[in-house]
Image (cartoon, rainbow, N blue to C red; front, side):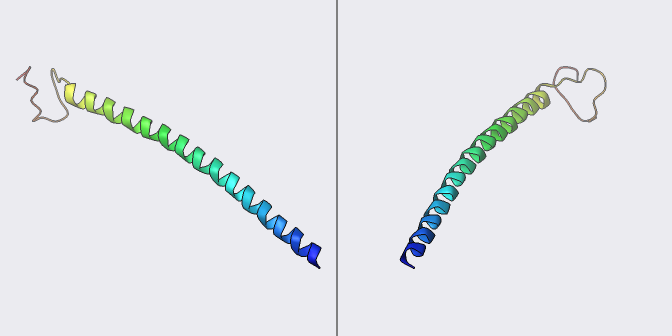
Amino acid sequence: MKNLTNSRGQATIEYILIFAFMSLIGVGLAQTIGGGIKDSVKSLGFVLTQELTTGVCESECFFRSYQNGIFN
């Protein structure tokens, strides 16, 4: 009976180690994916800011009250 208890404890330790290893892999993967998404959103925000603040309407604008100071 004593041998059975030792093997049961060993299996528990092995499962804990496997769970810890998989958790580390999951956290690393989440950080990598999160960093990529963060960079993509930053780039998109920068491009949209540049396009929306430097646009020039020469003849017709979608927004009629838009005044850019050049073609008024």
